[in-house]
Image 1 (tube, one colour):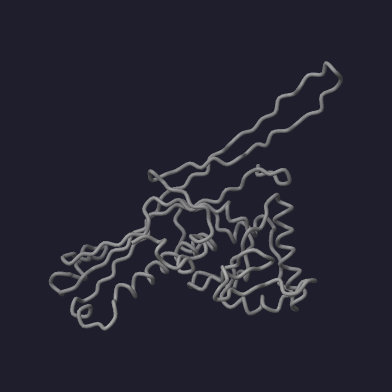
Image 2 (spheres, rainbow, N blue to C red):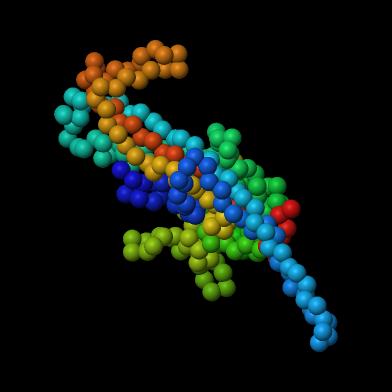
Length: 278
């Protein structure tokens, strides 16, 4: 079973919005522009043209494993009036998306190979806007977030929001009317200033730290070494770290579903004309 078979909202904001690359091995180096070339005026008819330089540095993605075992008694599966696994599988995908979101957005339980969290990176860069009290001030706050990114040489192409924040967004007005359009049944998704906004309701969002994150999500890179896959085992044994058996599928007439996802994560911060990454 692959992740694309499930609702993109359930995958989480990182899997849904980041640039996704396939990893052929445990590590992958992605080139990021580190030095921009310059142009020079040529003096006179016989003036010499100067040499410019363009250089690339590598961002490394390391595949980390997310996994879980789900034991289900066979009798429960046989007697159930609904397809149990069809109900459980999307919840497992949601749990994987939640874990990746928490690590990438706020650094929660992040593997050592992951970069500084998006939230911490925003703080370090000074790209923080304090929420205003009224709807008019809040709409200006959102626009100022875009301005801060533009001053660093990047363009907003999407937003991630705290659970319930959409109810504050519906109050926002610009000169031409509402700037936030909630997702309707026939709409592609919610839009804020014309850009997609996803409310992160999978339990990963730290509302005590941030309410809204604006970003150029093409610079958020997810490396997929092994897509979310499920295997089914009827004779497996589950043991704890000490080696003690805690579950025996054959002896307890059960089936154990195993979900595995191998993923790397990185943030590219290329050189721009308005912002040096040195």
